[in-house]
Structures are given as structure tokens and as C-alpha cells.
Image (cartoon, rainbow over all chains, first blue to last red):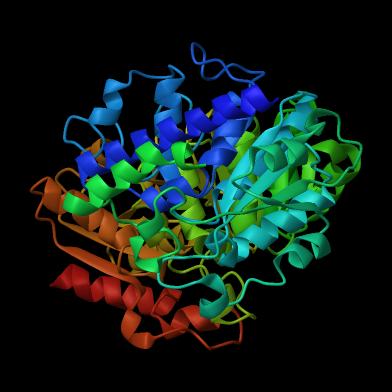
Length: 278
Length: 317
């Protein structure tokens, strides 16, 4: 396990570097929103959690992963390219005239399930897919990654109610709880707390973890395919927006910016040295 | 009893939903989502096809999202609610999940125009055609009678993308024969060489009545029923080729509605035929008037008498 986690840490470092490189080159992309969920996505895609097949992205038995916070598309695009869903050279064309994709998520990219960028949508689509699995007696699990700011959307709670009422225990929501939306910290702007209690009261099983700890992410997902509970599961992953680059971390206005010039250089340097410092 | 006799006694939503039930019995992939909309035909559905029916509550946004998720997994979804709610409350979900991703979900809205005449502007569906017909990949089916409403179920099941079936709350007279083919999107109900009234939904019946009234004033007008948007442009141009004037009639706001759609087609094709659009003028604001649908219509010049007068004046110009 220790060796596996060490490999995942190296992978997370590589993915952060790729995200940064892509966004710096393009001059756009939500770097900090991607960085807060790197460990979560690394676990799902490289930790043996998700079932998928890069050669057959629509494989019927695949697990469905819905990035409901579609502005974190850079991290997903980088992962899908790394896994061979599409050529890595696509990343070089991020936001270019002859490119395939840009800042928000597009359903026509291999490995991507839905178009996403407007918040509060992907969660409901994920619940619909989980319901379909029940109706079709299929065994895939539907994972959905939500932003915490996204949970301001009323539609999130419409879906939360629907999912628990219909006992969608094959639906796992992970909230990237980085405590920041665009202009401010959530608790200053409009309090989301008591957050876990909200989910509980909507009929969800909840687990709260450190969203940058591979051990805790694995712990929360232990036995997820054979869950006895009929409740859907939400993992509230406490994270740091911009994790990996100190000067971009926990700073509201870095939300949709890609660092440029000296900032980009500093960020690259810090990522390069990241694991060595530990 | 013939099918049409049976249908004539039903509300439009029952005519529609009873056909959904017939098809769903044979096809377990047909799913009905109801955002708290009921109907006798739906009671039967809930009882006998319980696993294909889900109450989504008064939560239209999630209704569309669940529908999208089911559609991605191969289900044919009918999402049902009162018309203004299932179109406007969840407009962005329709735009992104259904139109942008081109998913074959059928939105079913009950209460076209002033159908909820006793309920005030919250329940009037008078902007839905404008806002939905501008979406790529999206089709609107606006029902004129129960034969058409029933046929729209079959059409919906064959759609590769999303559509909106707009049903009247009231029982409208049946004007179409059983087994009519509605796939062309419009029908000429009365031919004319000179003037055509072009109407949609319940106003098609009004246009037919007015055409009779105008006959007594020695004015012979034709009637075209447009029940699919985008309008079948080629067919419409063919049908009105050579006529002198065109009048559109809709129980819907003028900007963006039927009249606008017809005007766009005429202008885009250099057909400079004089056009009169009759519908809800924005200057009148929202409708807080009651006393029955006919009374409300009279306030907007959509009653038989006002229409005949407007059309006669326009014809003489």
C-alpha cells in the first residue's frame, strides 16, 4: 500500500505539472479548481477504483464518472490523455483554433460523459444514470465530483432528495470542499455550514475526509461496490484550492486564472520540488 | 366506438398519456417523470407500470437532469408538468443537457397559452414557443387536437433529439382523421389563392371559425395549421406561393412566436408578402384577467369578432 501511495503521489505531481503546463500555454483554465481535486481523481483513475477502457470509452460496464464542477476540466483532460483516451497532443491545443476542447467540459471528448460548465447540472444527470443502472440491473457505479460552491445551486438539493428517496446506493458524490467560490470564502460569502448535516438530513450517508490524503480517500471508498446501505454516499473531501502551489492556494481571485510570466515559473518550480520537500 | 369518438371525450393530456401507456407496456425503456402532474391516464400508468414511473416532485430542474441521465443510458423519457414550469424554470437544463447534448427527452407541457384561464399569469404558457424554438437540435410539437396529440407520442419515440410537446388544458374539437401523417409539420386545412390565416394550437380552431365568418363578408381565406417548430420552411413557402397576404394567429406573445417565425421565413426568402401578426402584444403586460378563456382572448383581440374585424381591415388595405 505504501508503495502504491508513493506511486500515486508521483502521479499526482505529474498531473499537476501537466495541468499547469497546459493552462500556462493556453493562458486560461481553472488551475486552482483542478489542483484541489487532483488526489481525488488520481485515486479514482489510477488507484483501481473506476472501471474504464480507454480503447472503448463507451464500454457498457464502465463506471460513470461525472465531473459536475466542469470548470475543473483541465485535470480530467490531462488524466484522459495520460490514460490514452485521446492523443496527448490534444492538450497542446487546449483553447486553440484547431483544438478539440477548452475551459469547460465537452461531452464529445472520449472519456467525458457530459457537457459541463454550468453548475448544479451534472449531479442530476449522474442520479439519472444511477437510476438507469438500477432499472437495467447493471452493476456500474456512478461517481460524481461536485464543487462546494456548486452546492449553492438549488438543483443540487432537488437531486439529493431524489437520489435518497430512490435509494440510489450506486451513486457516490464527492464534494471538493475547498471552501472557496470565485470571489470569497464560502463561509464569508454565504455559509454552507453545517454542510455535512445538510446532506445527512437529505437522507445521504456521509463521510468527511482530508481530500488530499490518499489513505483517507481509499478509506472512504472501501467496499463501495458492495455497500449494504440503501443510501447514496457523499464524501466531503476537505481540500485546499490551489493545492501544490503556495501563492495560489486559498486565494479567491486565482479561481479562473492561469499564472503567467514569473508566476508561472514560480508555480512550476514549486511543483517540481513538491514531493522532495516532504 | 371509433378511436376518434373515444379521443373526443378525453382531455388532451389523457389522449397523449394513454398512448404513452400503450407504447410503454410494450417497451420497458419508456419512462415517465412527473413533476407533480397527474391525469386519469397517468393513474393507470402508475398502477400497472410502476417501475417505469417516477415522481420527481415540484422540482423541474432535477426532472430534466434525471431525464438526461436516463436518456444517456438508452431510456426514452417523457417529462411531464404544467407548461410554463417545465419550460421556463428549467430552461438552462433544457439548453445544456437536452439541446447541447442532443438527448432524446420529450418534455410534455400541459396548459398551452391561456389554458389555465382561471390561474393568472404564473400558469400561462405564452413565452415558451419563443424561448424553445431558438435552441439547436430542438423540436416543438404544438398539438391542435387529440388525434395529433396521440400521434406526437409515436413521433417523440422516433426523435433522435429532444422535443417539447405542448398540450392544451382544454378539450379541443377533433379536426384530423385517424392515422393522419403529421411528420411534415404543417397542414393546409383550407386552400386559398389570396389570403392565408396561419395558426398554431388552439388558435387553429379559431382560424377555422373566423374563416367561416369571413365567408359571409365575401372574403375567402385559407387556413394553415403549423404544429412543428422549426417550421417546415420549404413546405410553407410552397403552400403560400402566390398568395397576396398572410395573417398569423397565436395565443402567445408576439416577439419570437409563430408570427415571428413566419416573418423570418418570408424575409429570408425574399417573399415580401404583407404580413399581419395577431397575438399577445407586450404593451398589454401580463394577464391578470379572468372570466374564462374566451373573455381573456377578447382582451387581446383573439376572439372571433375582433379577429374577423382585424382581418377584414387588413385584407382591404
